Amino acid sequence: MTGKRLFGTNGVRGVIGSDMTPTLALSIGLALGSMRKGSIAVGRDTRTSGPALGSALKAGLLATGCDVTDCGILPTPALQYLVQEHFDAGAMITASHNPPEYNGVKVIEPDGTEMGDEETIRLEKRVLDEEVPLVPWNATGRECQAFHLVNEYIDAIVRKFPPGIGEGITVAVDPGCGAACTTTPEILTRLGCRVFTINSQMDGNFPGRLPEPSPEGLIPLGDLVRSTGASLGIAHDGDADRAVFLDEKGRFIEENREFALIAGQVCRDRKGMVVMPVSTSRLVETIARNNGCEVQYTPVGSISVARTMRALEAERIPVAFGGEGNGGLIYPDHQYCRDGAMTAARMIAILAGERRPLSELVAELPEFYLIKEKIRGKDPSAMIRKLDSEFQSESIDRTDGIRINRADSWALVRPSGTEPLVRVIVESTKKETADAFFDEIMQRLGR
Image (cartoon, rainbow, N blue to C red; front, side, top):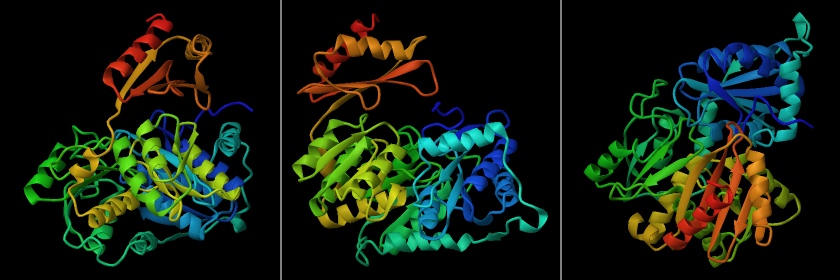
């Protein structure tokens, strides 16, 4: 089976008018409608190109005989929750954290997870071959609007926590003018928090900051945290499947440390596997094991994490938690996808239980030093093979590229799926060890 050509790690996306067009969205709708007959839910984030792409995608679904429910603007995890509860499949119009000129499509399976590689390749073939049979005039699908359904998602998160758990906690929220503008503030308010917001108006031009919640882009949120005396700041990407945090001093919390902090709390109450990509800091593994859980590594990408969690549960292996070191965390007792609002609510529960500042909780985590670099080369696969040979006497994990595991450090080298380069991650508990390991890899590559 050949690899994916249009779809990447999380759906298909590109610059509007060149890589991503209504014509392509129509083709995806036709292909999806021919593969997943029945009732299909469609949602979008706030991007200006969303209505055009959404209309085209819905036209394809309707032309193949599917009924379409337009759920309006809502977070990706909200649509995934609704698909899991009510629909035969779904499609989300979003480019997640990419800049405003981008947009794309994420295809959602009936269980709420994003479509996996094998089925995506089948869908791509239908898109590229343009061989989708259309139904006759009297069998086309029907469309309805159900913007209110997002309230089911809000209710589901609120029900997971004791009433009033957030009372006495002030929080500053930055939805980034994205899909979480009407969901995360509402959830936190219903949990009892006092909520201040910035960039909370839906605007696909993203005037306040880019959809990627970077430390630089969140400086105004830090100012809001300090000026309001908030216990923390919470920010989302464009489609709100991720959440990142600032402490009460307005300082950005690196996402692997966020993952570890929440993993520690989850693993105290729920034993089982913690599932994460091979690119994740060993800090998370350390915290999980210290709290009685085991770990399972996967290829990079939230789809791999979610599907591994599903597979383990199918084998009756308990799963406690999962996610990625980018603020995208997965709670199996809620749903098998990254959920930024659930992560926000979980952090409120942690602060309510600990009754200590967030900065203090983060400071108690062990220190790890992480190096991330991109190394360009004409043949990334050859670079991987060379390192595989050079380090063959060491402990190597080949789940995704190669991960070289040592007692005091590890390194991951994997090819990019979109560019002629390899991504290199090196980590150790000591800066000098991480630097030396990175230099060793560069030397073996002749750099």
